Length: 491
Ligand SMILES: Cc1cc2nc3c(=O)[nH]c(=O)nc-3n(C[C@H](O)[C@H](O)[C@H](O)COP(=O)(O)OP(=O)(O)OC[C@H]3O[C@@H](n4cnc5c(N)ncnc54)[C@H](O)[C@@H]3O)c2cc1C
Ligand SMILES: NC(=O)c1ccc[n+]([C@@H]2O[C@H](COP(=O)([O-])OP(=O)(O)OC[C@H]3O[C@@H](n4cnc5c(N)ncnc54)[C@H](O)[C@@H]3O)[C@@H](O)[C@H]2O)c1
Image (cartoon, rainbow, N blue to C red; front, side):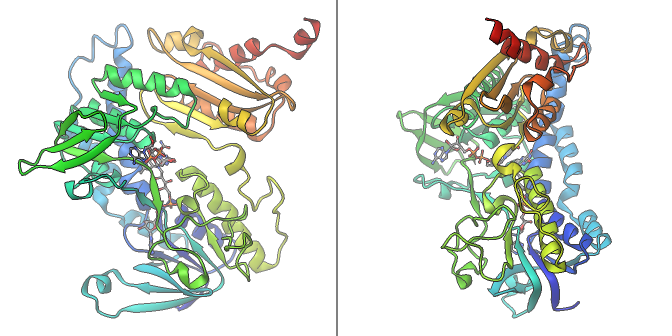
């Protein structure tokens, strides 16, 4: 293998793989360095296994909401079969399939831990040498760019006794071989809500300790509807409650003392309190950056130095979780496409389109980040919440509608419960945010993303006719509730 490449990518998660692929397609040679499994957190301990843990129980509950189907589906979910299905999605934590794809894409995979050892230089310590401490290092240099795609890891809050109690992070939870009888969860964000749903559905008695509100970054009705559903699943949901201390006794039982003096007992405790960047052992101090911090970038994903401008020579990029722009696989891969193409354009001396919405920038990170929280009901959101729009000074109008009163939804599930909200920028007459909560709203989300990214005037949206009878008719109801501008003039 050569020691000089056009581009070196550190981290072969979904985002690193994509930036490498894009750079190869731009005619460049690429080395992709991975310390663990090619495919990263998403494939093995995050998106894929967590969704596999959720889906079967969701399907059973969906049948239970339909007269006629519910009589046919009467038994409990087979947790062991769900775990086997999860194992199939993670390929038994074997990345050989993804390694094959890397080779077929013309990318050189280098196994080991990458450290930035100088400008355009990365030293790779092989996994074996890290274990034996034998010196087996390779120094690689990059003619054009080094891309950091090292992702994020679970944040462990400083709660007395927690670290000593063998807590689960997303890794242990998504790779669990058994369903614990009692699971305590700290946190009220996306991971906590999804994994509370998964484990409660698979038979755990879940106690969730949420220091503020559930899903507090989203529209308030999202947390209310998901919280009600979790309680129906038997989750002991404790809002505005924090753990004061944690202890795992000799009997193996974890005891969490809450700030109101109560004691919660559990067999396992899952920490879902946010993420930290994987930059603490990356050598960034050699180039004037602080280890353990997120890497701030411009919109072409070039890393910014302490002075807020890209490092001299435009050689260091950061994509995916590690830049903290949006901790989502699809958004990281979007950044990867922009960065990979920008690297190729800069290397080949072709035009750089770094204007807003240009080919080489990740503009959507600021305007239209879609996210589905795979609870039951799921929460599908994109763009700004009403509170965020107001905070940004947008002249905001909010329109809400109950999804259950749409014909398609009432056919979809008996007693369909759900809410939709659109957030409108009144000055521009366009949508800037949308949230849907309700069974199977996932697939509605992309329509809202297209409307926001395309800045489609609401007047034109009236001509996008939703099929009857589908849940998409919610669009028509939202527009009718908003009213047409000529109606407003007449009033
Ligand atoms: C439980 C859970 C569920 C999630 N569900 C979803 C979901 O449904 N949809 C969604 O969009 N997002 C989801 N996410 C978020 C998603 O997992 C991340 O946004 C995504 O994995 C980020 O990709 P990445 O490539 O930036 O980083 P990662 O996937 O973290 O990959 C980084 C890679 O870099 C490697 N690495 C790190 N440091 C080095 C080094 N110095 N040298 C060599 N290699 C290194 C790591 O081993 C890893 O393989 C979920 C997250 C969690 C925790
Ligand atoms: N379906 C998806 O798209 C999906 C699924 C899972 C994760 N993710 C991504 O992973 C990221 C991380 O998820 P997350 O749930 O860990 O983070 P989060 O930021 O969504 O939620 C963190 C939660 O922990 C709480 N918290 C923080 N510190 C605490 C402390 N010391 N004590 C008690 N509570 C504390 C917060 O109040 C919040 O409720 C998310 O930003 C999301 O983008 C996405």
